[in-house]
Image (cartoon, rainbow, N blue to C red; front, side, top):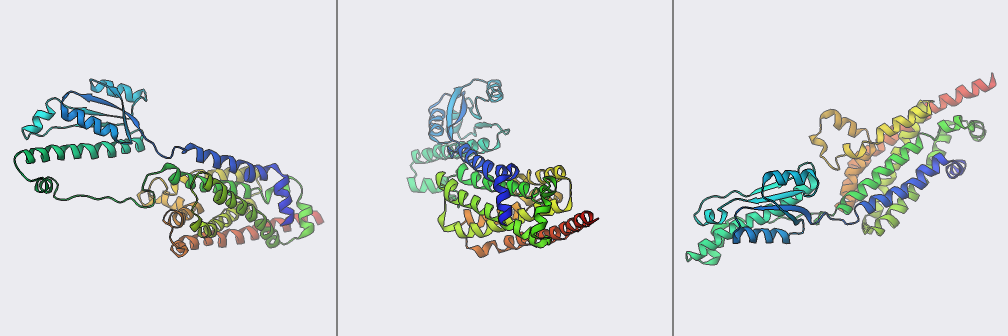
Amino acid sequence: MVREWKRIFSIPNFYVILLVIPPIIFLFYGLIYQKQFARELPMAVWDEDGSSVSRTLTDMMEQNENIHFTHVVFSNAEIEKLMKEGKIFGAVHFPKNMEADAKKNHQSNITLYTNGAYLVPAKMIYKGAAEIIIKGGLAVVLQKAEKQGMAADKANTLVQPIKLNTTVLYNPDFNYQLYLTPGLVTVGLQMALIVASVLILNLEFKKKTIDSLLDISTSSSQIIMGKMLAHLCIAWILFILISFVVFPVFDLGKPETDFSFFILYTLLALACIGIGMMLSAISDNLLFVVDVALFFTSPAFVFSGFTFPRWAMPWYDQLYADIMPYTHFLDGFIKLYFMELPLRYAAPEMVKLMLFIGITFPVAIVFFQRKVNRYLKKMRS
């Protein structure tokens, strides 16, 4: 273990991957979402009605934190042109005679344009504008009912007999930084730990240091356990960096979840180290195992279900997600960090991570012992 510690801090392959790149990546991930919210998305208004109702609705939408009218247009073609140029994310069209039709009890159709190529801004614009337009329509009906002599409370009940109250839990403000930064940081850790781990055993042969290693021990179990403990200590250093530096700096810290996060994170780190050492023990080709590690870890964020539910993916994609430790870590992380649930709620995910550990390290020990035995036999002959 001590020998591996020295190697980690002296070989660039290790200290760059484990100690230089992660803090830089963590900083960039935090700074990307420094604003926390996507507010005042640029929109266009196409007002053919020019009435007090259309102006009131426009003013109400302008007051919404998600919407900011930057352009006035006079045709559908102008809307498409501005969207293609990236100058607006949406638009609203008030048709001719909208107010007059409303007064005559005729239905009038307001058109809301959103750019589906930008999924999140489109949803935010729809959420902000639809709520106001619905309220505006109800207000027109309510005003007519009151003018006809109906009491305000009775008119309000008639117009809206069922009222919907929504409560958003765990990220009520839709804070991008709170939602995305922890997920990106932890998936980056998985990649760093696995990529570094695939080098642990193969570099001994590549750098011709295997003899000094075997002078200490010829037991693959002792070698792998010692190296594993050294890299686990580095993983704990990264945990301290995340929990007590990165998260507090970006106001993401949740001290009450630190212990649960540490337990789950340790299992993730061991699973990643186990996978990397298993690959390193099985194959002698260093470039090949690095390529496999990168291919294995790169899509982890997409397949994990963080941005799209896994149950909606094809079965083979779900299977691929299941063989990545980050998938199970994320399920537990959402429970422990975002929902702040007790550790026992993440028991299924912890068991799955322990399965990774229980399979990969024994396989690595068996294959590396074969390598050691072949090497010793070759040296004797």
